[in-house]
Image (cartoon, rainbow over all chains, first blue to last red; front, side, top):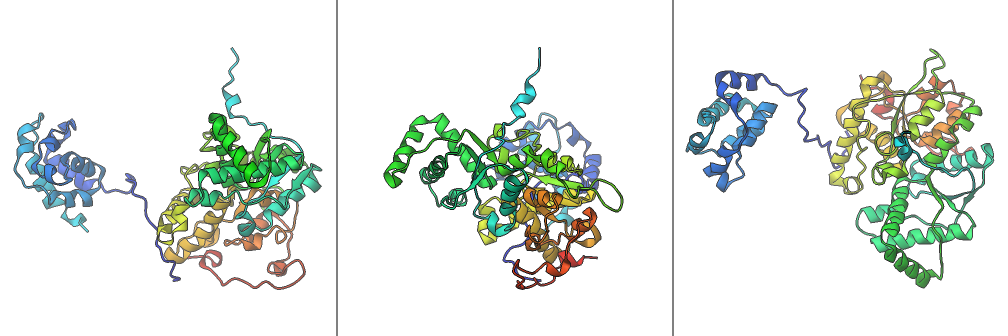
Length: 111
Length: 353
């Protein structure tokens, strides 16, 4: 193959037609309260890790719902499991359980 | 009340007396296109067109890659208008989409800020002793071919019809971003409903393919291409378009911008070499043409005189579908019979399994 000095850069767009939604659906089945999330962002606002890094729990939730697991899994390493998000969640979602579930279930999608 | 909504999407194109502003890059990419344009306008349609050897590049590529200042490019444009004044013409016919975008941008700047126009008049006078008037009509040359499309149809020797099946050929039309995405009122059909190329395909017997990424940029994007390491973004954009259009099995791609024609053609070769993917029939590429080349084919001009041998993707499948008679042995011969050399075989033309 000729050496062109560049490769084909793939777009960063989320392609919902090709993403695999089975793990996301499993997560929602096991933690059904996640469906009641109103995306208020209280979890992110109170997050200790979020104060120090670019960690954003609400963004991770969105990534999982879109089937973008790799970035979601990588982000989860920043969580310190302090549980403050769980205290402030107006819907009473067990956010810490979500973190643990993502770490257990979505490891296959890491780089 | 009568609705005037569509009036905003119309564009007045001069019928005669054009001052031709050539493109610097088109003469390299598609060496027969501009010659074919002059021949069609002058010889076929009997219109007056002045092909001025004194005018220069608009310096648009330098402007878009931050090496030519806004004030400099406006003065260069002012000089072109001054040459047009010398020729006694008022209708500027711009060959390149980048130049067309530059001319519309400069005229719009002067309309919005008359003091800038005064400064540029002063710059030009100090530098060259020239004065100028602004064109009465500014049109891209694809607008002009669109304007004369029915007259071309009347003189057509071949139509965009599959000679074997009698079905209309499927054409993808791709319009340069700087044609109407910057100033929508300057384009036929504006930015939402550009009809300039679609109108040609329909008038000459073909059918237009409507596909999801129809309005996506080809990926040229100046600095996306000019820096080698960035070319992955350029080719990524072209690939997105090619993947989107491939399921509709287009017979050809028609472009009105030098960058789009160049990249949709050349990147098909590169994608085939890197990934082994092709998008046309029989594992080959999709031929890409300029509007002058397509008009020339419709009028029965020799494909090799139109410069079609300079394309990366072979155009023979399209010529065969249209039933055009051509001499395969003359493909790589100059008009004086000298052999110009044959390019190395490429996957995009041999067919990929």
